[in-house]
Image 1: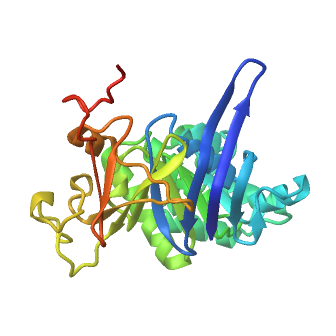
Image 2: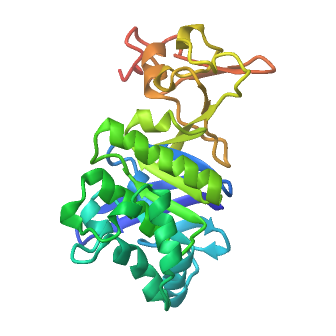
Length: 306
C-alpha cells in the first residue's frame, strides 16, 4: 500500500533550510494496521503530511497504491485526497464543521464527491457507536465522541488508507482504548490500511508492527511475536526471548532498519552503554557483526581529539 525509499523533505526560507526527512525508507502492506513513533521534530508528522497529500516531498520515492506522490499533477493530487486517503487530526476542531450535525459532517465529503449516501453514513456512525448522536453538533459532544465522528468522516468516501495523527492525544486513557478498539475492528472488517502516528507507547502496544523515526530516518522496527513464540505472553522482558522490548510488554521483537546502502541507526541507549561515540570498531565472526569502542579510546568512550 505504501512504499517510500530515500524520501527527502526540505523546508526552505530566506535564511534557513531544514531537512525534515533525510532519506527515509518505509513499506506498509495492504490491510496493515501499524504505528509510527518518534520524538518531537523526528519527522513523523512530516511523513504523515506527505502520505496524506498535504505536502510535497523534495526527493526520493513515495508511492501509495497506484499513485506516485512525486509525480502527481494538482488535479491528480485532489483526486488522491478525495478517494485514496482519509485523514484524522489530533485537533478535533480540524476534523469537524461545528455548525453541522454529526450526520451532516459524515455526509460532507460525499457531497463534495457529488452525492451523499445517507445509509452508508449511518452505517459508519453505528460502526463507531454514535448512531444515537446523528443530530448532535460539535458543542454537544465529548472529546472522545468528536474523535469517533472524525473516524467515520475519514471513511466516508471508502478510502483504502486512513492516516491518524495522535488520535488518542486529546482524550483520557479509557476513551483512547475505545478509539483503538474501533480502529482494530474497522481494520479487520473493512480491510482498510491504518497508519497511526503517536508518541504514546501504550498505543504502539496494541498493533503488530511499530516503526520508530529518528532524525528524519526510520531507525528501529518492532514486530509482534507469534502467540506461541517465547516472550509473547506478556512476561517481563528479562524473562522473554532475546530482542524483546520492555516498552511493549515483551511482546514485540526489535529490529534495526537497514537502508539500501547498508546504513543503520544504533539506538542511543546502546551506544551509551557501550561508551561508543564518534567512531567504533566492527568485528565479523562469519554470522554476526559486533560493534564496540576503539581499544585506544579514552574511558569516557569519546574519541581522543588531542
